[in-house]
Length: 137
Image 1 (cartoon, helix red, strand yellow):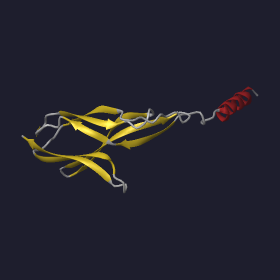
Image 2 (cartoon, rainbow, N blue to C red):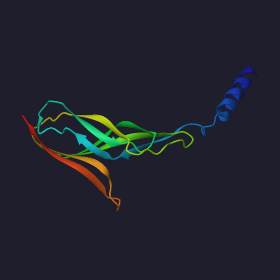
Image 3 (cartoon, rainbow, N blue to C red):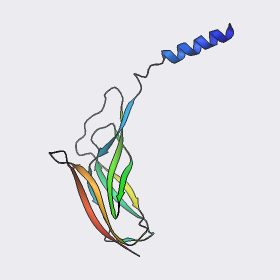
Image 4 (cartoon, rainbow, N blue to C red):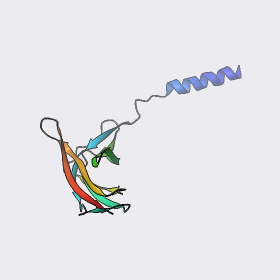
C-alpha cells in the first residue's frame, strides 16, 4: 500500500508539471557587420584573433559561437546566437553591435578566403564580407 501511495504521488507530480512556462529557445544566424583589423597575412601554426562585429537583433539574442563551414581553402563563417524567449518578452534592438573573438590558426601555407555572412539581400540570397589572406610559413 505504501508503494502504491508513493507511486501515485510521483505520477501526480510528473503529470502536474507543465512545460508551458518553460523558456522557448532556438538558434539563429545573425549578420556580421564588420571584421575588425583583418591581418595582412597569417602565419602557419600561429593563432590570430579576429574581432567580429555582429548585429544583435533582439534582447533575447545572445552569442553562442561561430558556425564555420570548410570548403578547400575557403571558410564560410556565420555568427550563431541562442535566442531565449520567455513569454514573448523580446525587445527589438536597433544598431546593437556586439564584438565576438574568432581564433584562427592556419595549419598550411597558401591563401585562405574568409567569407562572413552579412545578411540576405531583397531576394533572400546570402551576402558575404569576403577577405583573401595569404598564409605564410
